[in-house]
Length: 469
Image (cartoon, rainbow, N blue to C red; front, side, top):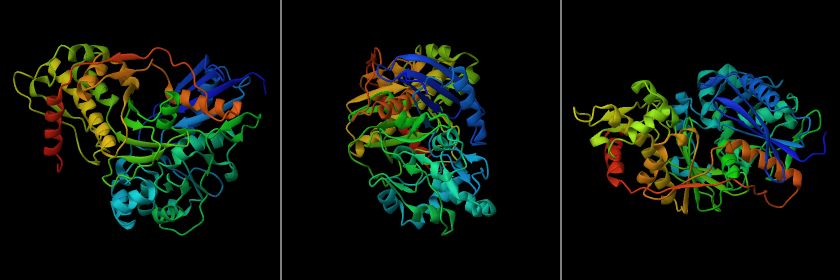
């Protein structure tokens, strides 16, 4: 292995794998690679490994890399048999078929309040435990084969070690806290909940928890692998977020999360009480519909993403009464897995392209305004809001977001912050420092528009009217 202090950070997301090679001390980007893969709600994990190999190759390989770490999409269920083989295609975070299973488990655990006390969150369809229960109820023969359960990022870390040996499975607290059978407050698995989910009192292997700043294993060539992280925790590391910072991320899903010194337990089910990747906590709200709403807008209007934004900025705030409930793929927060999108208030005056574009962007963002409100109601300190993700590049998103949040929005330079966070994990463990290294993020843009509370009111009327649809 080379003596150079280069580290690799990986982001294995729903749609692609990104690899960044950075200088461990300065964070300077040396080279990078990317590979797209099949997306969806159910997928063969081997596709992620093939994409990882392709992205590493495009990034120039790992021969001179001194350490690596992988961050990945949370929650996905990878069930393994006793030989280490994948039993069935992985069910991902955005697969809502396990909604009833989640409700059943919450009831069996003593109700929402008791469930939140035990694991920091109320179970919804996204959590791994819910998917395991769905498998136990609908594919009992597959459930009987389960010997170990992994998530996307720790399965890939395992594959980098050659797979097969369960003793080499490892993860971190941030990703484990999204399983539904892990207590972030104590940083320990709840084996009783795992067995309840699978309806079987067997012995199951779970990835061991690697502490922040430590390595969990090595590749066959000797490159150490840091603990990795869930994608949102990785982004928080990449952005160097501190208590008081709330990150609003607009990717396939929309998330609002904050670094917190104390754990949260939300019995309403809106806020997931997760761990972060630095030893603190990461209360998080996730919506299923974010950038995909802009994708839909391009199809409806027949124009590009930038043109949708430019068109939206020509319309008045509130789109002359036109409102969108953006539940195109059901919704996680609020928990409405079978809901559909709704346009409301349309009339002859506002049924124009500009108002439709404005309503679609406002609808996408209003769900995230609700998300930040939910964090504040739990006592999360909100000093700054940072806006990231692919949809944040749209010219209308930042100004409309500032108006809806009623405060200044910070826009970090466009970057792969999940992969950056993984790279920082690798650097942290490699350099042996007591705290994570801090790198220069570049110039942060600031957007501060006049507040438009009437738009939020208009959205919330529609949200509440459709609660039982």
